[in-house]
Image (cartoon, rainbow, N blue to C red; front, side, top):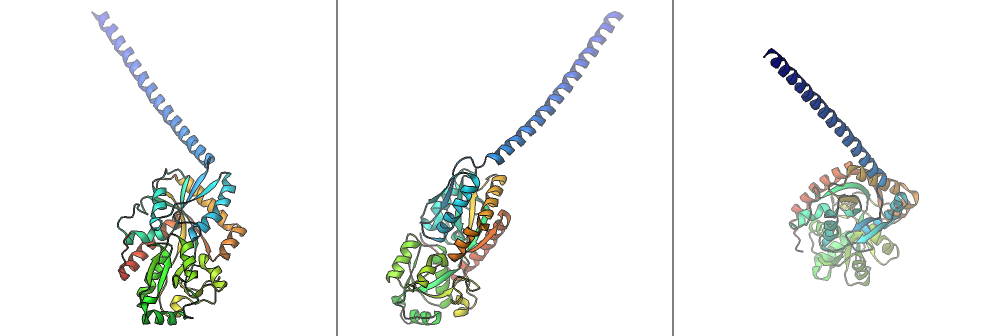
Length: 349
C-alpha cells in the first residue's frame, strides 16, 4: 500500500514536471513567434520604403488641359519621374467642377500610385453642393501644397472700361450687355466672379465652358466680355493686348503684372479670393509613402528651372508639407463656408 502511494506521488510529480516544461516551451515559442513577426513586419516596412514606386504613378488632373492644375502637374511630373525612375502619367479627368477626377482618386487604392492635383476647389465645393461625392477631410490625405496663383479680372478690349470702377459703372448702366466666362460651374474662377458681383452690387451673367481653353478663346473672340482667370492662363494675352486687366484678386499685387492693382485697392476694399494648388492621395495611404512623395515634390519645386518656369507663368511656388497642408485645408474650409454663406450662393449642377 505504501509502495503504491509512493509510486503514485512519483507519477504525479513527473506529470507536473512535464506540464510545467510544456508550459515553458509554449511561452518560449510564443515569444519567438512574436519576435519573428516583429522582424518580418520591419522587413516588410523596409521593403515598402525601398520598393515604392516600382511602377508608374497616375497623376490625375480633374480639369481639361491648359488650366492651372494641368500646368503645374505637367511641370512637376517629369521631376518626379526622374527622382523615382518610374513614369508619372498626367491623366486629365474633367467634369462636374473637378468632382469627377477627385472622386476617381478618392476611390483609388491607397498605395501612392494614384495622386490628385487639386486646387482649393475641393474646399469650395462642399459648401455649394450637398451631393459632392467625396469628403475632403475623410477621403483624402494631404501630400503637399505646391503653389498659389493670383487670379485677374480681365475684359475684352472692346469693352470701354480702363479701370475697375468704370467697368462696374458700365455693368450697372446696362447689365444685359455683359457676361463672363469660366472653366465650369462651381470652379474657383466662377466663385471669384460671384464674389465680385456681390461686392460690387452688379450681376454679370455667368457663361460656363468645359475648361479654361474654350473659356479664354471666346473671351478673346468677343463672344463674352469679361472673366476672372488665373494669372498663369491669362498673362500672355494681357501682355499681347488681346485682353485688358482691371485687377487681381489677391491682397497684394502680383510680381508678374505689378502695374495691375488689386481689386481691393481698385475700388472694392476687403476683396480677396485666394487660389492655391495641392497634391492629395487617397485616405489611408501609408505615411512613409506620403512622406516620400512629399519630399520629392519639395525637391522638384526647389529645382531652379522648374521654379523659374512656374514663376514666369504667374505662379507663386509655395511648398507645404503634409501636416501644414492639412492645416491649410481645415482653414480654407472655414473661409469658404463663411464667404459662400454671406453671398447666399447655391449651385445647381
